[in-house]
Image (cartoon, rainbow, N blue to C red; front, top):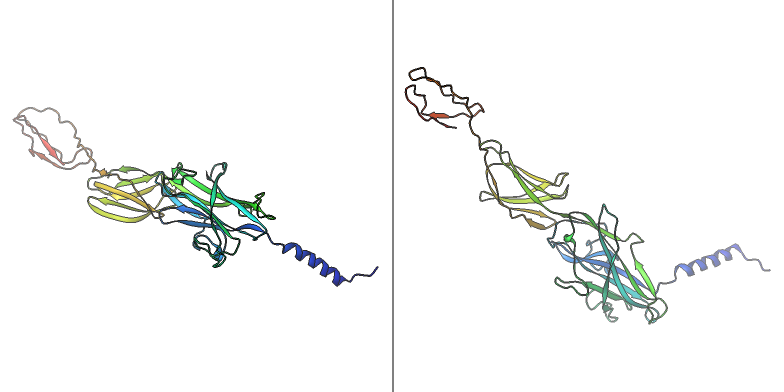
Amino acid sequence: MKPISLTSVITITLSLFLSVVTKAQTFGTTASAVWISDCNQSNYLNTSGAGPQLIGAPGNNFTNANLGAYTQNSGTLILRGAQVTTFKTPGVANVCSARMYYRVYLQSATPGAFTAMDLAFTDNCDILTNLYPTGGVCVPGDQKWSRVIADGVTTPYAPVHLTSFAPGNYTLEVYYDITGSSTTTTLCDETVVLNNSGNNYKASFSIQAPTIVSNNPTTCNGTEGSIVISGLIAGTTYAVKYVDDGTDIGPNNYVANGTGQVIIGGLDAGLYSDISLLVNGCTTDLNTGIILSDPIFSPKFNSIAPFCAGSTAPILPTTSTNGITGTWSPATVSNTASATYTFTP
């Protein structure tokens, strides 16, 4: 047997290794993004892809994003759909369909099942320009699949209004798959899953339900009054505006405390109206008119014992037993006739 040199073994081994790792995938995905509407924009947030293949604007990232705090049933945070771009080797492979799967769940709860949303075929790559007719770079064999649901549409899918959930902290989780064939241009017998290496694509958001209570000043002409806005997201900064007896106040920034409250203190008696909160570019009008009032105190005095006409009349105290000072009218008590005496604080 002819001996084989060590160099030959290394060369053969390296050749076999290269032949395995350089084998091309014949169909798959190039990029993906979800369409989110909020108070700042309505656009794609990227979940996969890089460089010119990105679907959304650079910096519009979904994964691990905090989408912010939103008021319950305000319709200010909406999942409208998604887009996936795919590739296939022309004349060899096939892509038949694409889907997004999503679920929404409280961060403190066990996640539920995913809901599927089919993405409609949108574009083939224009082989003369290497561009999609609806925008974006591509190469021959690339295709675009997308769905963006407008308000009022219910069939086959309706927009997912994320503010319809109860107050709490939530996760929005998505992944995708496509069906096709790696060996023929006609079959749809294989599935490629796009799921962030098994971790899926996740973003967080919070739902709040603001309520208001008020506290009157505790002294006359005092500034101990307050307005307390509860049901907010702890640690979140809110820009608060209101009208104080016709004067616009704010916006002033307040950070919700650990129990989700913003406390507007140092208020005197008066009418407070048009209270609003601004967070994440969304304004919540509380549309509440609050009247703060000075406290009402009734002066209290010790009873005066009966005395006879002509005897020494008692002296009326100018300070009540509960600390209210004032004057009497008449100022002195008659010791000859009955009368009514009025104390004015």
